[in-house]
Length: 294
Image (cartoon, rainbow, N blue to C red; front, side, top):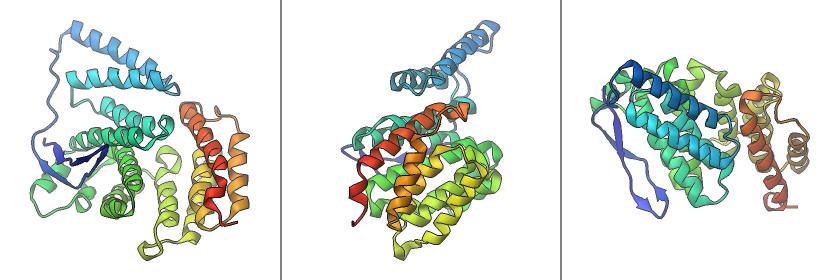
């Protein structure tokens, strides 16, 4: 099994994620497989999971990430731990950080963990090792086991690139689309219709010369809202992307005010994320005048 190591060029907290090379795989566990070691790892995992449940608190999330990092150091091939690291670093940037530099740093770290997680798929790394495949074309190698890491890595790469600007977005959009399209093929329901929600945002956010389609955007947003009406992220993203690009100020305001009126525990498994969506809704409403001409 081989891992992807990609070169990084730093400019402040900005970085590029265009080049990488195939090297060696995530190593096997370094802790001997003894009963005592297994028990200690199980206890450490339980502690990390307990902190994860409190990820709505930024400090607890950071503690959870440190705990999962220690577990990964013991066994880099543990896919479940890798998923928590990708998703957790993504959530730190998306749900807690508000300034560009720390958000970009969190998403960059999520991308790092995500690529290591995706490298557990030996067919994917094998295709890339041949030299005539791209990370887009090699996406066909991913299986349902890869969906969580694939979704959160794509999400982190998309957000990181968007924050860097249009040139960087266009540089990476092909990879993000290919990977998210593969998630949609393997599990279209993942994270409350995540693939359709992503493409709904892309159809709105893309420049006109790069495929903007506000009608298709609204269609996909309405589709995921109908399927998962209590997931607040749909409404926030629809207001931020579709309503602003189509200059639908009333729809922008109505959608965000609706989000703020909802309970955050309608979907208990993602209560911290729903709390974060309400924070986003408040911030968007506070900046309403920045998005509309009149």
